[in-house]
Image 1 (cartoon, helix red, strand yellow):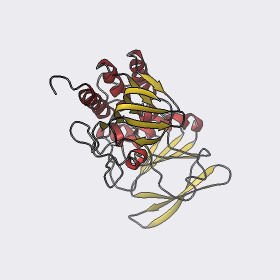
Image 2 (cartoon, helix red, strand yellow; image 1 turned 180 degrees about the vertical axis):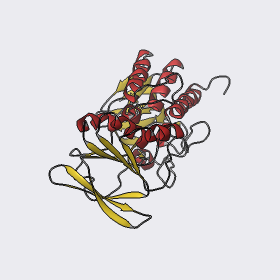
Image 3 (cartoon, one colour; image 1 turned 90 degrees about the horizontal axis):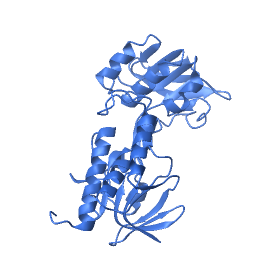
Image 4 (cartoon, one colour; image 1 turned 60 degrees about the vertical axis):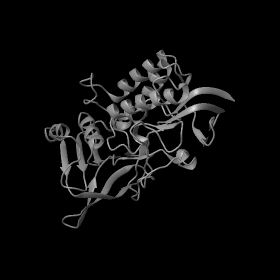
Length: 309
């Protein structure tokens, strides 16, 4: 069993920031990531609100963060998923699909996953016209008609990205106003090939081998219509990746987000959480980085017990 001072679960913005501050504090630090580094940051077509970068793609920002993290000496294991956590004793045990580790402190920065609407055809046409990542699949729809479902920042940035490739972009939002930032809304309305469909709910995705149309319901007029499309991007928010933490008795709220205090502490001593998996009300790259830093410094204090603690 390998022993570490600090193990961080997740290599998104929060986990990478925690890794940098863990190593700089003198902690032997390991990051475990079930996919590739970057988390949902890497999926963002364009980021314009992260301080120091007026315009940068999510992929580029994630790559810069990962390179910075590795340069400090953090060990990152990609494609290694956590299957069980035992957090009851002073030595925290982390079991993955490859090995078993022990650590003096744990930071859970496992992020979130994309929510599904749950309509007929959503799962059936995944990869055949249905996507949740504009930057991943957008180039496949060059010169074609696409529908974006959602009303937040992610949906707006996805629609803007697709507008530069697709012939026609429609956005279906179940309300009559966006939750997205005003700057993104203004940019959308300035695009000639973008049309916003207010009060519209996606009810079904149809096609033969590939998507060719959707069924939309207007919750104001109570009318149903079919819309011809070649692709559907479902961007309706995220849900926390907190299952392993919850199974290990880490306290979560009614929506599954890990409860934290001002110092990123959970209900279990030596266990911290940071980023989108927490119940912090703001889910942004900047706040995730700040939470990761705080969690790492608190973990250092827990392990080393410096004079000022």
